[in-house]
Length: 109
Length: 113
Image 1 (cartoon, rainbow over the protein chains, first blue to last red):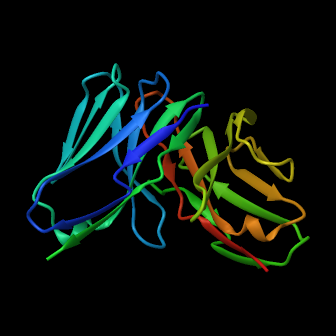
Image 2 (image 1 turned 180 degrees about the vertical axis):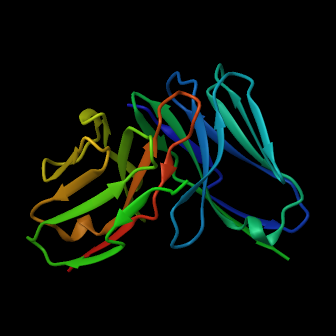
């Protein structure tokens, strides 16, 4: 059974600081997704990573994928309050997404 | 283009009843997946349909079923509701070209009393 582990599960950051969320998974897959969820809302797609070494950046967020290490990272640069949300990674295998438990990110002034 | 739509958005049912949720995918998308989200178990895969065929199913009891119509719209049904079925049910659609993400709808929030 595919397992996806995210850490940390809770992250309290100060505005302006940098941090990284890690996503480890247990089986070979070339497709990994990052989603954002605001309280009471649905999932918003952030990044699709499709191959080893893939790197995507959007604003203060950058995601990367190392399929050999079965590891993806979501790096946050100079955090701002608007980034406060829960972030999920999900691995695509056999037509289904297996999600990590999510990282609740709180950015404090 | 229009996103994934789900109806109803909110639902209150009592134990033992059944419920049907509906999902309309993005135009042109032939794959529809369903997920259950609860605080305790997180996001769990229910099933995926592509061109009216179920290609994968999660570890849920047989009370949970789904189908997809020829226009790609999908429904899921839960029979004999239990308190533990209270959750946010999310539908996602994809073109499955291999290059795209799955796009999620707003969800149906089900409360079982």
